[in-house]
Length: 96
Image 1 (spheres, rainbow, N blue to C red):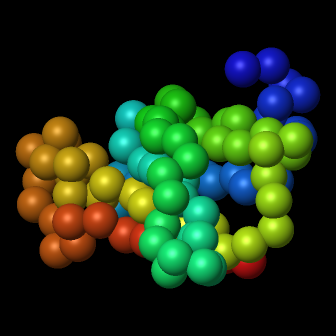
Image 2 (cartoon, rainbow, N blue to C red; image 1 turned 180 degrees about the vertical axis):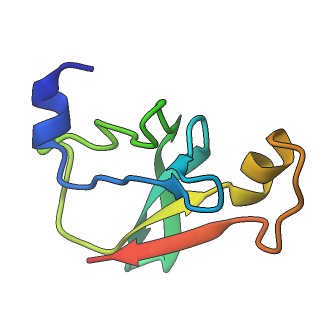
């Protein structure tokens, strides 16, 4: 994606593998938005972090509406791909 997609995305992420001191490249993740009327999480998009541990363009400013969002990071799959075990199969981070 171009630099405008990076700068205009209202939700960003930067994942680091602090054990090895490197970005967490190729970690699968998904973005969801809570439907408050139905009390369910709707999937917005899925992706993977790039070589810098970022996933630019998760949602555009035009597609963004105020509400509760969560990003689900597939940490178990990430560590398994590196030949290591993980205590957490996934991590979810919510934000308004």
